[in-house]
Amino acid sequence: MSNTKGKGKNRVKKIVKGIVIVLLVLFLGILIVFPPLIMKDMVDLHVDFDETMEASQFGLSANELVLTTSDGIDISAYEVYTEKPKAVVIIISGIHNPSVTLFYGHAKMLKEHGYASILYDMRAHGKSEGDTICVGYKEVLDTRAVVDYITSSEKYNDTPIVVFGVSMGGATAINSIGEIEEIDGLISSSAYASWDDCFYDNMVLMGVPKVYSYIQRPFIKLYTNFKYGFDTMNITPEKEIKKLGDRPALLMHSYEDSQVPYINFTRIMKNAPEHVETWEIEGDRHFIVEEDNFLEPEKDKEYSGKILEFLSKYFGH
Image 1 (cartoon, rainbow, N blue to C red):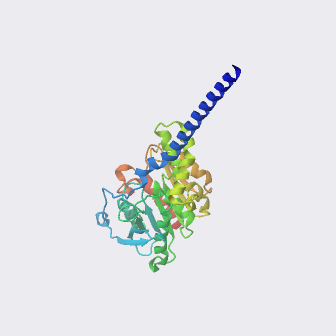
Image 2: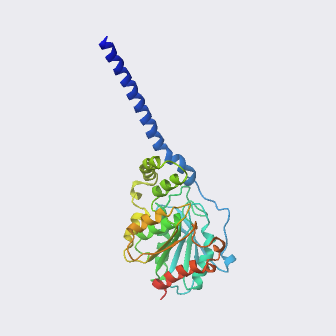
Image 3: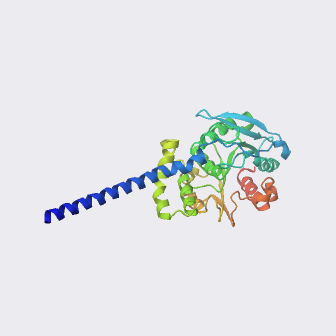
């Protein structure tokens, strides 16, 4: 009788153990498949912008460039030149919008104060080649192609190079100055500390339980490493900012940013050199400039003043 009971208990234990194993395997499977399922529609595409603008609409002339990256991607760029520029500013936009051509207003403002600019569409955006957005990991190669163009051009002989990006462009700008020593200065708006940080933060904002979001985090990192290459795993703004050295930088963020939560700014600043300048503003202003003045940034006196003051301080002579 006791043997029968013992066998029954063992059978129950095996069943429970089997159920636990099945549940663990299912949970692990969900953790593994979740990142590619969510990211697929975000990054596996080429962004064809609904709205683009011409330099002539801003009273400018632009030289359209096609620059090839070291991994064979043709990048579309627009050069707004001025004689004997104080610096040349590389401008980079965000993950899905707007087209970098909507930053011609910034280029106009810069030109009026003696700065040239090159606006480029990252891979998989606009006229640039590619069908995968690399969320800042490989876009450094796009910036590298622009820097190579500048440093090989006689008209930019010894001209300082500043990289200026917004959102994913801001993250790419930080990654670029960390990886490219020829860049002399940085302006970054609303950058994420790393893609997995931003992914995690937005999961929490969408109401996903923090415990699950936290457990999911390393699987997001693992997926991006497989997707973009393990050689890119340390190319994140919170790590690349450490490589800034004594080069000047201006980092901007809004406290209620609904796209890249403010916590990303604090993560980056934990690793930033002490001399890095910052501007933190109230509200949800992902692009920092007042929305109504996006195309004419000089009308936002505080925003334009911060940028021009920074440039004048370090590159105005």
